[in-house]
Image (tube, rainbow, N blue to C red):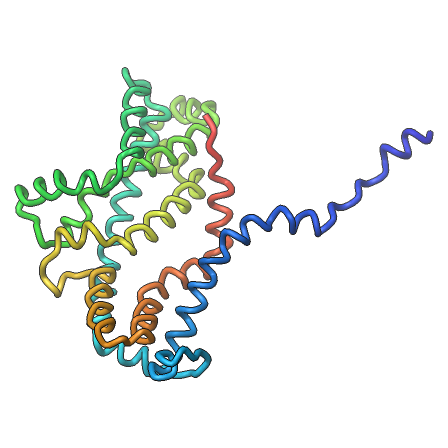
Length: 283
């Protein structure tokens, strides 16, 4: 009787202090980034004269007005949106088809192709700049937004992530669809794709943030000022403001560049965290 009562007793909840200690390393790693972000935000709203004296805490919107007037932010935003979201749309198609083929299509050398794709993950992007640029020149696409998109249409990271997501789906579901007469394309787009939404959401977040901040490849490809993206426009703006020690102006420009991604993450934070938590890598 005593033993059964002991088994039926509910376990005591874990002390909050233990959970806090487990989160401490993550908080310590995040602290430098929080300090930099906080200082940038304060500097953006601080008058330049006070900031040059080493003072923080004043409030003004003049830095934002000057920054907005100093650079063509509407065009920079538009070019960046075309680049990032147009690329993401193409990537969703390519990585979905690649992930499905690597997971479920019975073809000779499927695993060899998968390992070959993984090799790309170990290549620094900078090593591919020269061959990519030579190909873009031969195609006559230099100084175009299309040239920004082409090298990233096929993503090894996305193919790997979607492959792992498709492998988590029971094969019995696919076989049942084949028995009912569904083709491979119908199985992919109508049955399997809705089941890998967490993986797609996780990949979409990584792709948008990475390409929103892309600098080196646009610097190599683009020469026209009217085709610049935010990263190039902000770099040119920051150089001119730095010569006059307009640190508040630079901070305001940085906030304008980062604001869309920060707002998107804040709005969809729960969805993003759930996407990464559910995109477990199995298989």
